[in-house]
Length: 304
Image 1 (tube, rainbow, N blue to C red):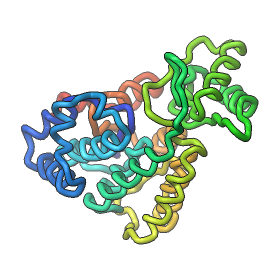
Image 2 (image 1 turned 60 degrees about the vertical axis):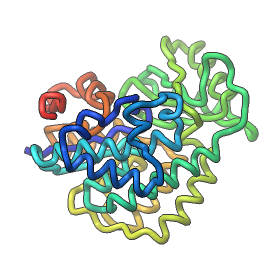
Image 3 (image 1 turned 180 degrees about the horizontal axis):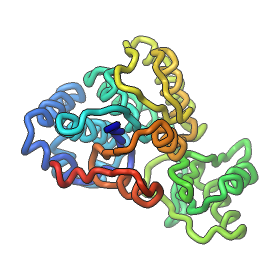
């Protein structure tokens, strides 16, 4: 049985995340306590008790997601050993720990730095009512979405493809006015449903360039090992094993497109037939069930 572990990213956070496994498993408690120590505050209290407005802030939710993903993994891997890892956006750091590429401690430090750098890049601009810096476009016409982004970007205001999550879900990201223009254009072109995302910033866009440059400097001094468990990267949707290549791809991922659909399809094409979502909620489980018939998806609620 070839088991692929899937680690969710930003958007999977919710008040109470990880509390059930914290109460039941020592291995999970150890991970949360390590996070508290390195971050310098009691993030578990925020995760378990809120308030939600504080938890969903980028500087808090990214490390919270990493810790929860790995707390689940510490339990699940003992039941179903891992053969491949995939992580969506910030979830990629959990995938690297699960691949024995990054230490837990260094992953926490890196994600904390990443979150702070990305937070610094969030534009100080007025957000139109009921809109956002990011929007999920429910269409299978990727070329149309790329064209919309090109038409609606300018030297002062940009929008680009941030995530290709599935055959029918593409996320765009950028300055609020450019995102609105792109959604209006797409609606005129026949796209029936677009959902503005409740998220702080224009992630996976060129607006995050300062964060990418900062992470490049930080990663120079971090020890990354070759994976002992295979790992597929967001940016290329392919395997990566050389440490300097992994560092480069982590930097590119910040401003680049998360090719999640292609990453999942790469795993399936390589014969990985069992998928486990390791983290809070079931965003990835629902996506897998909806889009990939015939694969086995383990329900972690039956295990933990």
